[in-house]
Length: 261
Image 1 (spheres, rainbow, N blue to C red):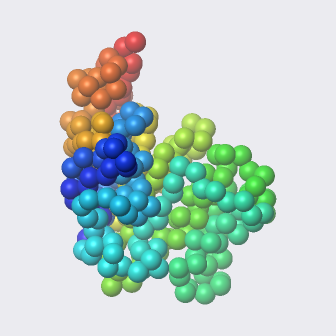
Image 2 (cartoon, helix red, strand yellow):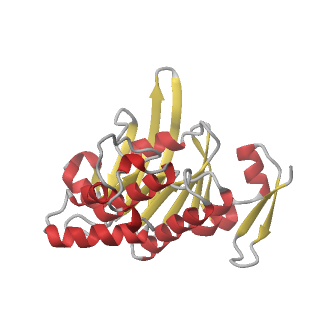
């Protein structure tokens, strides 16, 4: 079972946002999507999450077209963290995370247990009683991630299939410590069989945590493959128009990208 997008074309007015894009992420895999501003990353994310439905091509989730799943069934299989989440009600952080349990019927006691575990996982249990509206941008981002984790905390019934986690720039509002915390968490989830797709800007974070990288440029797939094959000076220069050196990270031996500017 997988999350697959086939031959995606997306146009808004006279502007082409995506051209012939194909993507597949499998259970237990961490796929990072990279590219400059305007490359089509967020557009592809919105296609994958069904925020955009006016595209050409098809998206398949666990062997069935999206349109063949009911929304509540998709919610059991797919957790989505957008760049920003608009919430203007004075809920506590705990209540926000508890919203992730709405698709489930596991009972109040189990839902509370999962909510607390999710908050602890993202280092936000101390925020549980705080008003969500009073939180900083980074704190809100962690609480929203806890909500998504609570939503896909346990594997769904076998009739649905595998779980997937989609993250749109999940580290953008976080300090360095929490950037690594969130991506390490996503990596650990992939080791538990969750398929992860994350849009990232930091090449070195992608190198450290992803299994595969897809690069987008001007709405097309510029490069795709494992981290070592994709993160090369030539490919990065073509993508971002900047000269870089790529060394082996002395700890992980994964590519370490250093700007030559």
